[in-house]
Image (tube, rainbow, N blue to C red; front, side, top):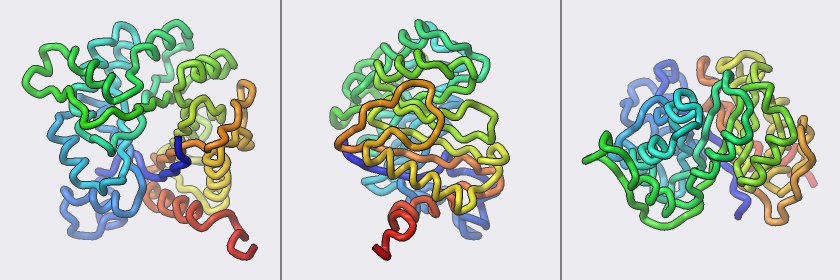
Length: 298
């Protein structure tokens, strides 16, 4: 496990960004490439709303640099409609829809639970047991897709690579030590979410991957992050990347062991409504490149 740190955005196709982040006249088909040239990662969220096609994943891969990472948001059919129950075939369909066509660009898979889903450790444990932890196992699962994907399924991988999963929760019932320990037992990253106080903000490290979603500090999906707050997040990211677990945020369980070789950290800005996300992401990435305040003078 390396100490890779990537900062990016959740989605990229927003009309309000045209003429602000995206130059006037930039064709829509070139927006992903434009964003990818300025960021380290992007979260694919169309996959949350519906099964995409392999051709789309192929196009997204072709429009991004070879070392770029695309996180993929798991389908709401699994999380919101099926509520994680009886989901082996829906999971097979999700992975057969083309996720593996991203090849080396495939990053963590994000699963977002609805606020109405109560904490149920048995339900979560059964779901975690179904999740493939390598791309080879994901390909095996994809081959179990149902007839809806006949003729359009992608069930192969170009190489066998680790596959990481992250879970974002939105209910107060998850603020309990048993939940954190369950995630650690299954090596699932607990999403650190900043949501203007709407949902729990938990800083427990539960995997060698740390996954952060910044939805807006003062106003959900809308407010930007001033430099002082970005510096706080930069300090946390540096600590996580170095393998630390004490990042100055609220914990619901004991600290995870320090990772001597560091952790991978992914940060996604989802405050898109007023076009703050791409600029906040670039600012945070620059802070991380430049080092902590005063570092250059030492």
